[in-house]
Length: 115
Length: 114
View 1: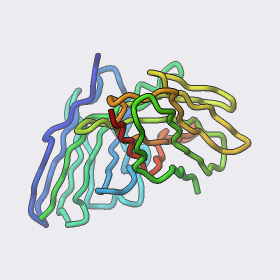
View 2: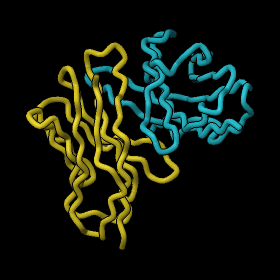
View 3: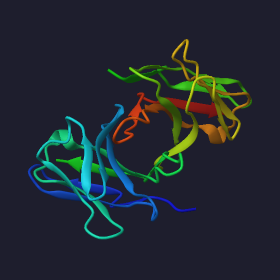
């Protein structure tokens, strides 16, 4: 069964450093998402992406964040200058959104620890 | 605003017990509703969904009915197994939303003891 994959599974970085989190969505999906979950809190929407542009972003997704689909398979989330409060689990998701099939399929997540 | 409220966990049950995890929502329109499950060390997996009032979603023995009058989508299972131990998330989305983003509840941890 096709699945969303994410790398790395765990990233440790120092405050102020740039990080790039990588995702490979399901191959025939066209809609991509990033969510995050701070330990013990809700899963929160960050951004959605379609047709090579952001379709919606949350208040969390400020100028420090960016997303990119650099080739036909990868979808990346970049944090330019990490803060302690960026420590969280980051989930990538993708969706087909065709013929009523708009469920989102999630990757296993990347745990980001900012020290 | 739109939100989802779930019962606090953890919920601890013995094997073969009946499970209910409560979920209520606040929404400006008529959302689609989902239950996702997260097993230890894994990502979120779609468990079941319902797209309109009175729809019942079901999968792997779990069921939930979309109740517009009580704005609820409670998850039930008649006989839980140890392998059902996981965190369960209730979520909603709007089909008219440009992005179909998911709005999640805080999650409820279920622990099933043999």
